[in-house]
Image 1 (spheres, one colour):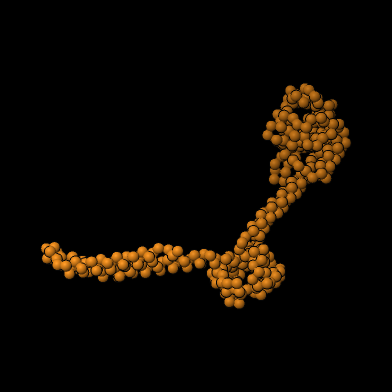
Image 2: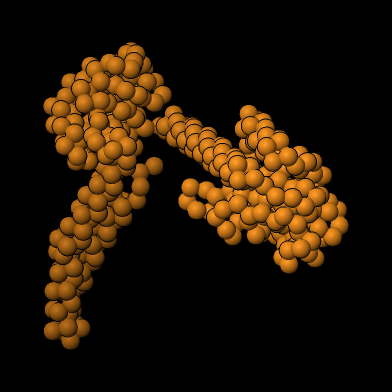
Length: 349
């Protein structure tokens, strides 16, 4: 357990105080783990851990009040305990559980002596009271550590979000309910500086930076976002350096309580996508034209060839030269149509 330095000093002072109050050479603050007893603060004791099975504290945490052992050599629970039969030769023990506000016992505040003895009622009360003081300090420090960690996590999360925010090529702004700029990223700042020679600043009115052609649409969708609706529009804007297509999203911005406090405005350059869509559309138009030619322009020579073949069949394939000349003309016409289709299908060099 990592504690604040000031908190460690206070806990050590409590250990020294309880030893003086109870008139014992030894006092400890112990915390129980799965297999070990950790001795965090102490006076008159040279161990920092003991086995849990040997710990008097292991019995203290199972009860609510102070546990007093006047003479461990006469207590069946401890008569064979290595801390009794060997160093430090414990005889007297009194411990109060360190119980958290939610009922979990973490360890004990205890006093120890090598001689059998008793505690007076006042000493017992003071031991219990100081144990409560210990747990209050531990819980307070734990709460502070949690708050510190939450603060660190929040800062790390904020830094990650800021990094994404600033590295995005899209334009992002947060506007308050009065259309004033609260925060913006570098992409929108750099774009407006390059295109409009304008400098963004916190508190400025967003409407001053909107292209006039978009103002009516901006007002309409801003109001929708304040009403809780997310909207996305696509618009073309004609700038001095050329036309650009934008995908613009208006998103309600909410606080921790879920209240709408403004609007998140996101604009992405989709010019390349739109140009690609136009290219695909042109290709589709070309294919439809080819399909028209296939269904209409090729029909006539094919019909001619079919009719001539029927005449040849009717004459038992003994057709005269004129029919073969007509067949040749129809085939040539069909060949020209096919070449035209092929030329329109191949990409231009």
